[in-house]
Image 1 (cartoon, one colour):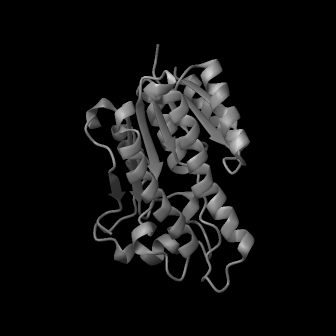
Image 2: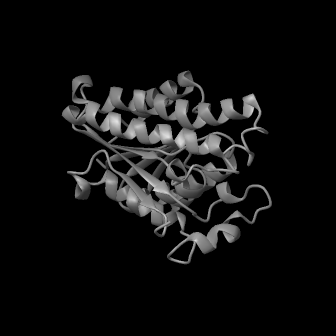
Length: 247
């Protein structure tokens, strides 16, 4: 039976690139979507047409009960996941902290931080040896913003990703004895819709600060996610890997 790869926020961008790549490499891939049903179903159809197996599940990760129900469906339909990519996230508006509204901060933290917590909580219940699982790999989505700070744009987003870094270090230690490796990827400027904020020229404006002189592609992040999920990285846990062209 093919191993199971689970992705939150898998209908677009880095999530979709990871879903496609995981399916191509022999995983059965289940992924969540929240606002992009058409894109999610089109992705499933594409993978099915290529001989792969994919399942899209409507789930808003801000709500713990929905995340719990999603993992219950996954376990019932397919079984326990072998790898989980905790990818779902939003940036929130581009704003200095004095212009940020409380509900905007709440939304970013609920998706990026609470959603990641809920996903890891449910994933470990299925994957850990103490719960009858065999272990596996969890990869979280951080960001270079966690170290760069997001000043003048989205400190709220950067702070939420700083929390992801703390989760990665803590969870890697907490679950090492249960045969679960926990790592994170920290992309920089990647050509996805999430960068199309404000005037839509963020990538163009920040490109001069990338030492490699180019913007990254979502597949380049997906490659690292798949490596962290694979036996090739069997002694890697607690790592946060920047994917940012040396920025």
